[in-house]
Length: 524
Image (cartoon, rainbow, N blue to C red; front, side, top):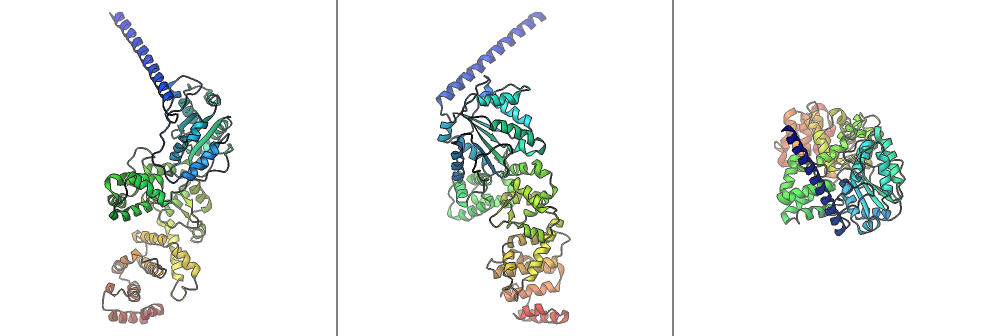
């Protein structure tokens, strides 16, 4: 009986295996017919080695929404139409590197020149062995000790072929595996007829490969008009009462394609005003509901933060946290003069630039994109020990500028004006610190308000907090300075008492403590 059951079971299993194999072959034949009848852009070709189904793979679809990268696309196409093209698409996370690579694959000139195309994500490849296995799996090559040689041999026999390695920073970033990864990449680059296109976070090209010149510049944020096109195409043209909300969302996106796309997706069903309100409450968490880095802004940022190079540098993290409260960016000179307690500032600044967590603007100011800044400020705000020296530096600049020295100190006034956003955030942080001097902060707010007003930059919103600081501290010099401000600016409604009475009280205080500057302010 047991023998009969065993024989029957074996027979059944054999039949199932045969049936599965037949279905497998039918599927392959169906796919082969489909690949012959469909547009060449929809499928890559078979490799010349192996008959595994792994040798047939769908290319990613052509991006349906693609704005602002026409110059970069044209640059890549010109290179790919040459022989032995080697191109790297570099830039920060969320800048649209993968989208640009996808757009390249579906250009008619590329399809005509490269009948065989491979698009391979390296996101899960953390070493050279992982990278080789990933390519072998994609090409349908069975794992073996000689897998790297078989991969190279397979690609050598393909003829004209375009190989796209997406997210190449994952295997390359680790210093321990960088050498072997570059060696393997150089083997691929030596294959005649193989065009190589990689996408990587950061600004560096992998070594040991002769990249085709001129290099493609690292991707920068889109123009505001192109960012607006993304919003309108995903959501809709705003109604009249939505225009201001859309403009504010454009600013908040930092013209980062990923942030703009995610914001627009939310606005498409919640509206621009509701999306803006949610951003003000949730910040970057609003754009972090997706499962992967292409649909989750915070996950995309965290990938850069967890890169081996950045993770190894505590001081780079401190510098990034400081930049998170400096919307105007900051020059290396200002960092050095302020004596921020971060050693080897230039080296750590270079780390942020190389990992594309920061960039250098046209004025040579180190800064971060708005979405990155918001996330870091929320998750990793700077400590008081890091921000306080900069606060003292700004305070010194503010104290130097007075009504009598204003015209003669144009350089300092210009330096302050360029950093009013920074100073605002530094003072705002001081108001939230338990051990900060509220009186000094209040006086700084008054000076910032005066400089901002005289430079036609508008009133500082922090001025509204000064009456509360006076109430908390009971400090007479701060009370006097605020009342002087109200008298000078004709904001008499904000005075706590009759102007004549306040002037008399102020003069009495000045005569008691001998503060001629404040007396002059009262008489102005």
